[in-house]
Every structure is written in C-alpha cells, then in structure tokens.
Image (cartoon, rainbow, N blue to C red; front, top):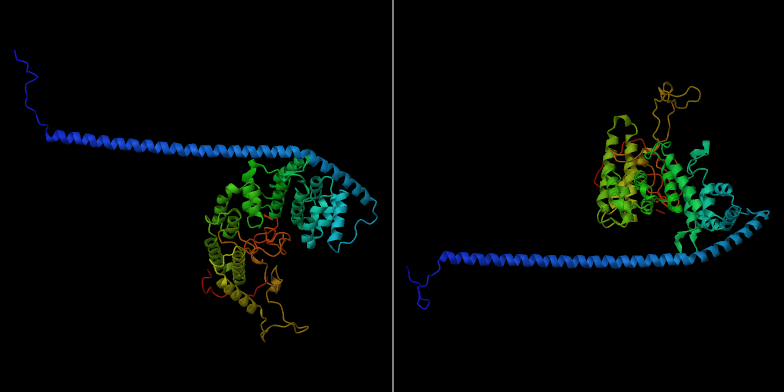
Length: 516
C-alpha cells in the first residue's frame, strides 16, 4: 500500500509546455476580441435606439403641433360661421335692392367703350341672374379678354348665387357642347375665364380661401356635371382624342368647385400627359394632387420625345436638379433635326420637303430660344448659334419667295396672251394650283406624334391665348401658349395651366453646324 505524501514535503514542480502557453494565449486573445465585438454591437444598438427614440419624439411633437393647429383652425372656422352668415345675409339684402333698382332702369346696358361700361353690363346681367345674356356678352368679346379677366370677378360678386350662375352660364358648351352647327367656334377660353373668375367671388370673407362659399346642392350639381363630361369622353374618341380646351375646362371646373376625386388621379394623369404642351398643365396637375406623380410623368414625356414639355414640368415642381433642362433642350433640338432630315429624304414629299423641314427646324429653334429666355439659361446654353441658324433659315425662305421671270417659251392663252395653266392641271381631280405654301405640318420627333409647326416660339405674348391641340389656323386667345406643341407649345392663363406661314419652294440648305 502506497504511502500518502506529506503535504509539508517539497514536491518537484512540473513546467508547463510551450504549446500549452500558446493555447492559453490564443484563448485570451479570442475572449478579448469577442468582448470588444459584443461591446461595439451593444453600443451600436444603444445609439440606434437613441436615434429612433429622438425621431419618434420629433414625430410626436410634430403631430401634436399639427393637431393643435388643426384644432385652432377648426375653432376659428366655427367661430367665423356666424360672422360669415351675417355678412352673407347683409350682402344678399344689398344685392336684392340693387337688382330691383336695375330692373327699373330703362337703360341698364350703357356704353362698353371702356372698363366702366363693360363692368356696368356685366353687373347688370349678374344682378338680374341672366346667365344666358352674361354668357353671350362674354363669349362675344374675346378681344377684351384681359379687361374681362379684371372685371368679371367683381361682377360675379353681385350675384345672389355666383356658383350656380356660372354653371348655368357655361351649360351651353360644358359639359357637352349643345350648339349644333356652331361647334366650330371653340369657347373653351371663355369657360376657363369664367370658372377662374368665380373663385374670388366665392371666397369666405372672414377666413379666406380655406373655405369656399358654395352650397352643398351646388357642389353636388358640379359633381354630376363632371361625371357627365367623363361619360362623354367615349363620344369624343377617348382620352387620346379629346380637345385640350375641353380638358382645361374640366380641370378648372374640378378645382373651382373643390370636387377633385383622389380615386381618379390616374384619369387626371392621362389627361395631363395628353395635353402636356399647354402652358397651364403643370400648375393644374399640382392643383389636382398629382405632385407625387410628377417624376414619373416627366420621364414619360421625355420617353415620348416631349422634352420641351418636360422642362416646363420640372420647373413647376422644382425637379430641375433631377432633370437638368439643358440636356433635355439639346435632345429636343437633336430630335427635331433628325425629323427634318427624314422629311427631306421622304420621296412622297419631294415638292414640299424643303418647306416642311425648314418649318420644323424653325419651330424647334424658336421654342428652345423662348425657353432659354424664360428660365434664364443663357449661361448654360448660349442662344447665339440658335439665332444664327434661325436667321439663315429665314433668309433662305425669303430668297425662295422671290418671283422668277416667266420663260419665253411658256404657252399663252389665245384670248389675252396670259400664261396657260399647267398642261396636266385639268386632268386631275385636284386641278387647283395654289400660289401659297401648304398649311404648316406637325412638328414632333419622328417616332412620336408631331407638334404643330408654324406657330411662334414657345410661350407667346400675353397671358391671354387659348390654344387647341390640333394645329389651328388662328391660335386660341387665352393661353400664352398657342395651339402648338413645339413652337408656342404651352398655353398660358390659369397653371395660370395662357398662351403662351408660307415658305419658298426651294431646297433648304444642308445643316452647317451644330447649334448647341
């Protein structure tokens, strides 16, 4: 049996091996790294929780602030009801007296040579609630559109029920044109003018535009009218074929009566895209609640070759950084140049190819120059080369117009010695030979619907021209963007939503240099 060693006795110490030492060292290092990793992770979680807590705190504070503001606004609106009603009642009494006085007036019409005379007639029809007479007077005085824009709001304030009066006034042409044979005379400009003028007449006198004095029954009637217009789209050929003035009137109707429907934003978007060349469309789109859809709409316009329209939309909603205007304008000019070249190469238009190509390029140049001026882009896209190219085209056109001498061997009439018509003129069903250039063609990029070409550069003069989407012989007064897409493309006057010829027969010179 072995003996148990005495604890007091010294025993020989065993030295640890070097491998064991390395193992222990690696364990310590691993534990240290794991501790640091866990510590960093916990710190990151704490920092993230602090950030989220602060963000949540800010949201709660913002919500409390918005709630307080909303409650204060509701309280103010509630307290203002009595005052607004008193003002409305007193106003109705005054209007009643004025209406009776006007009815007894033997000569209410007066002269209309100046603003006072025009206002007198407008007030007379409004006091009498004679919507038909009011409409006939307004629609027949397009030449006084700026004066009407100034005086109609004041006259509508004389109506007992301005909103109902306006709906009755425009009912002949909106939501459906009921004039029969007179439909050729488009009165969309007058509809938009009257609808815009109604807004100041129905603003609450106490709290302003945050409350419009339109009765529920009138608002319901306005909704019915909007539904009727939408149902009539099929008869108009669908969204793609509806006239831009009709679209503008529809949008202004929705905005004026406050009946924009969020469930129909897709319909509004399609209508805006279809009439994007109109100057007011960007503003109308924002008023219709399409602000969030603007980036997608701008990209769609660019993909369709409507870069110029896209530029106007970007400036309206502040997306210039995302969609720089200069590259868009250069792309627009490039597309126009390609389209002009394709026209010159078209064997079906050999006789008029030079004219059509020159018109297209001229329209594009004018539109871009107008855009550069409007948005102060001279530093990024100098217009000098564009002006030189435009002057060159104008000079060529003038030279081609000069009459040429009649050759000596021309056939002459036996009766009076005058020149004979072309030998084969009488054999054709279209024997008439015009001495004027054919109507302007459409000027869009080759792969997309074209823009009307023979209209002045982009936004035209006064904010009072109303255009149609198809190339008219006379631009519609109301929107500064006449009825063209390229040249004069954006009508102007409501977003505003206003408006902003013959050529020689020779061959246009070849393109000499890039003008951008």
